[in-house]
Length: 490
Image 1 (cartoon, rainbow, N blue to C red):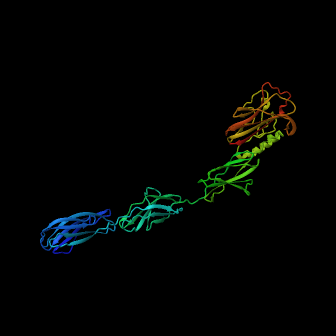
Image 2: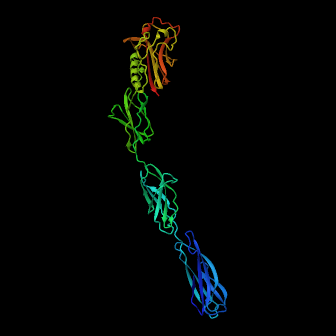
Image 3: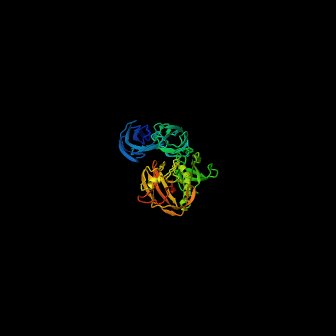
């Protein structure tokens, strides 16, 4: 395109220009304008002249030439190329030209204005600033920062989300603004999301990846297992139970001396605890317990109720009526041990030389052993089988009335057919029951030992005399033996 100035004394100047590229693409950042500065006449000239040219971006300059144009002629005197940046609103550029040195004093001039092409619209940029908040069990609110629109208004955004960070089969929806609340999500689940903007040119690049976690609706944990008694003493009981599922926030351990829990005491425990020791209890007392689990304010059902009984205070501390105290202790331990499901050997006032076939607890055959025989596995004593592994206390007593005498008697505990001797401590002048009648006991031995036994172990007690000992005037039928076995730990 050419712009000519007015004639001055039959001569004029003009400016021609071309733009490359004429139609730039979205990625073009500049165009080049080729400026051509020309002289034209309506008469003949033959003299030296000077063209002054000044395109934007290059600055003023001059070109001397000899003008020998004839009437109606024109020629290009100076050509230059200038690069101009373009944008979505590029604007214009201009150039001026003038002529001096003409013989007739003419000084024509011209001013040309070129409108640069605008950079065409492109797809939008990448959204940034992804954030999520207000997650619930099934919804999430998403926000992002709008990108550059690429020269055309953003008409919508595409939001995509998936449980897989690779987005193999994402769910998606379109929204008009830079935020979205998506619904229908799985609870307690981590999701990945991304967003892209769209305008008349299409979708721009996808944003970086965001993530959010929906909340999980609180559900009541399952019922804990029935508390089991794992240990007992005279003033404490230890219970353990199978954990609820999933691991709860807390447990409530409830106990009472009433089987219907009319006046219970509740103890709050951490949800990872599955055992508890009740301490400071009364001896020989039954306690009832149960457990429930709690998560998010929701309670499980109470576990099946259980119970435990504290042991009786050691009756031997008083050294009272030996046979009666042993019987009482054995009975108390029997009640306790019945809750654990193990056997107990209870003492009986049975003449040693008259084994009682109806005695279901323990009998001794001392008629053979007191004559110097070490105890054998076939000495006639009652054998007991341990049903639960644990730590056991074994109390073994032997006594005789005032008449007669003997050299030395021994007591053995036989475990799985092997002797485990125990020593005796003489106690004199204590009353005993003999055949139901109170007499004065000359001496009795009370032996206590503790040993760890396994399920299936067998145990029995025997009384015997060393070889060479004399029985003097002892009436064998007047000897009495007492044996108790009680589990004291696991």
